[in-house]
Image (cartoon, rainbow, N blue to C red; front, side, top):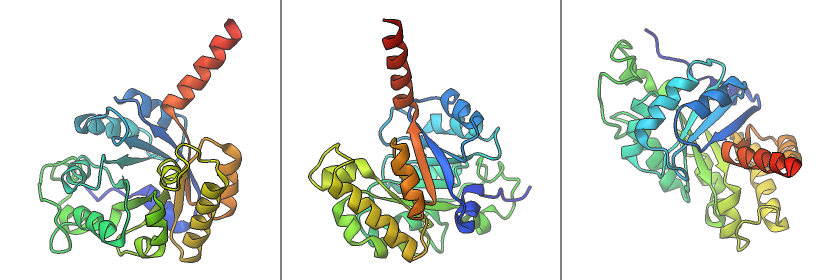
Length: 254
């Protein structure tokens, strides 16, 4: 058995834009249904959800039924223990939240790499290693792992280039919600100052050749960021789509 290719990472390197969707509802059914829609990538979120670690394993299995769709897992924090567990489950792309410095970015890189280049614990019989059938997994795993760091504070934006160019960082995701709070406009992602900061971040990342991404429910803004060089854009979340569609249905039938 050969090391599985990371389609998401490969397309980032090719510069092809990838459209994604956010899974916040725990369990494998919703991510499987989203994958069936043909998105390029699905985020299995554990930071702002009730999804537990063991449930991520089932979600990865569900998404894997659709080889053209990539799974991205967001741990609850930049914690080596969670990073290790999700990698062992077979996640190849992780999105690490709330990275505020190059030092924190390097810590995430270290957690994803086996010694001597990192601190990831070694286990032979994991799903990631094909349950031991990928004989060179521990020496080659890094080739197909992809690290996205989230920049979501004004402090982090001040250090954007330093964070983005850490060896082992593959892409930067701008977190608009927390950024709005950090800039003094909590929840107002459309505030002109927040929008300007996001646009500036995308422009700066394009200038240094680092792929950039975001989650936005504003379709026009998503298209606009595409003109600024966005590499990967999540255009919705399962719970927001559910609530919007149910509210519309209720309104029509009331």
